[in-house]
Length: 91
Image (cartoon, rainbow, N blue to C red):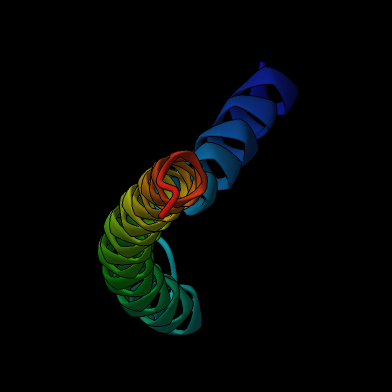
C-alpha cells in the first residue's frame, strides 16, 4: 500500500513540475522573437508598398513608351504623305 502511495505522490510531483509555466529565459526568447516578427512584418509591408509604387511607375513608363511609338509612327506617316504630295507637284 505504501508503495502505491509513494508512486502516486511521485507521479503527482512530477506532473506538477511539468505543469509550471515557461521559465524566464524562454519568456525572454519569446518576447525577442515576437519583436523580430513584428519588425519583419513591418519590413514586408514597406517592401510591398515599394513594389506597388515601382509597378505603377513601370506601367506609366510602358504607357509613355507606347504613346511615343505611336507618335513616331504618326510622324513617319505624315512625312510619307508630304513626300508623296511633293512628288505630285510639277512646274
